[in-house]
Image (cartoon, rainbow, N blue to C red; front, side, top):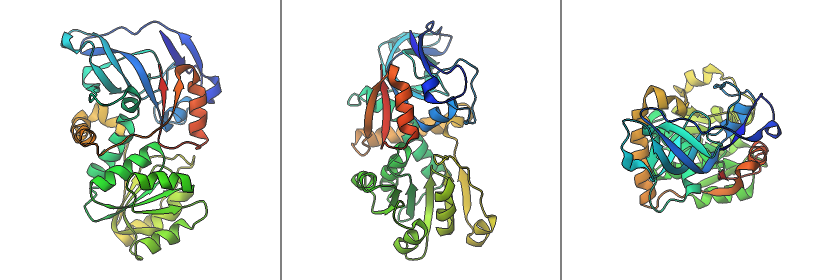
Length: 324
């Protein structure tokens, strides 16, 4: 089978596409013929050695796939062969075939394409667990989403509205903000030409945001954290800006506020029941046509370096996927 390989930490153009042996299937596992792979910012960090997980070389990036089960290990119902599924993993998705525990392979709704399936688990799973479990977002609260046109940001906008919050979307262009509005954002902030801190103040009536969803970090954190509401919750999702910020803890003290982290992938091993329950709700919403994954662009597997370059350069919106 073909796989995208990272043999040393570096830029996307150092990745290679090579023939490698098909992975064996062990007890409790399933082998998937991959039809599409999601491309995510952690993939870009992982190949550069900047992610918290550093797999042994050579490895394939890729945290989520959609495809068909073609083989099962002992202890797995043979009737699962042929099932259309989406699956998550810690790495390894950029390949023609992958093996995952059967619990990680979730049946896809009949009306879900492989491309949507590959772009669904990580961003919607992250946004939902962050907002519902970690931040305890309540109906009527104000939710500020930074990077609101990115994959996980756009998912947070959609889920925030489903949870009946007032959603303020912040992004760097009018085009990105228009996309956020199409997914339900009530208000928008263009932080390319507007002062983020002052706009939050204006839009919240000087109260601030109850929950701030931040996959960006850096300067955006420095401004947004100063506009958190009394007893607000600041969700640290990631650092797409490239800088991990520091918190002036007096802000948390004076506002009785919390900074709450989310490493969604850790639930795969530490508490998979959290992910299972979350996906139960997410797939219900999808079946009711409440969630609409936005696939900005599809690339061939061989073009994985280009997809990662485009992601790093932040010229994209929603999700990027590789088709296999």
